[in-house]
Length: 408
Image: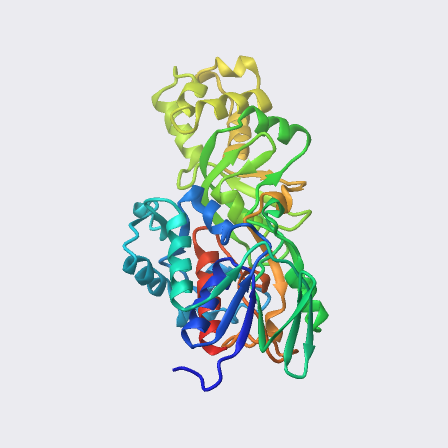
């Protein structure tokens, strides 16, 4: 329905959420301007998924998100679902596939390049008469009787409503900053403490030397975060050793929950009773070298490095008949219940998203309008809603942008 009086709307941030909001607001007949300081729109979309854009997850629900208010995202995610965005992708003839469908990951990627998703959004913006202004800095936002005044590169412009879709400070080399949080605080909003999320973890001393020696090795693992609460997080996926520490999907997932000082439990042989397997092998293959046998269960480089770290060169040559029970237990402790304590993460430099953000208790979850300032809206990553790895953060961007754009 075309409003009787079209509004002048400023959307700050030409990312996934900002563009989606602009499309829907433009469809209603509003005069929509999207501002971004970058040279190109949607740079996070461009680099995501290795350049193929993991644009959504078909199994996305509110349970795939972290927030101090876990109920906030339920309604938006139900109003604009993964199926809705998939339908848009299909309307544009963009071919896509699910990563590891046998594992039911639900992660959908473009068969081609992520630029296809960007082009689709820009085409929708063009059809809705949305104006996108790049390489444009917003110097100040102030509220007045008629709406808002934006100081844009030395000039003042009036708008009826302002939408903040600037994301968080993750990946600063792309121009990410805390701009959205500063605006939120200016208008009286609380910020849930932020930190880098979906980020590789780092280590010191002997653990770091161990990971360096195994750089490039990946193992399907189960990671459990140890904390004082009963609500423990557990993820199973590949864990990758790097020259800085550990990465890979399992580490990235657990990093969003990990806090400084906490340790992690790692099971490198999920669904295998390791001690029982060794006992059977000792009975049936007493003359087989233990290291050779372990090479059938785990990457040879890892087994070799593990022997160097916790056993000896002599143990590498021993067969099952000559291996003591105590040494089997040492191997079990590192393979089935390896406890490690990260010293930190790689930080915002490599983080895919930011945990925390504008307190959702101060935002209307139907319209995304501020409860502190009429006419001001917050969408996407800038709010305290952080998704799991695998397309969930994009789905949040689409859902929050859509809901805001249709209600504004």
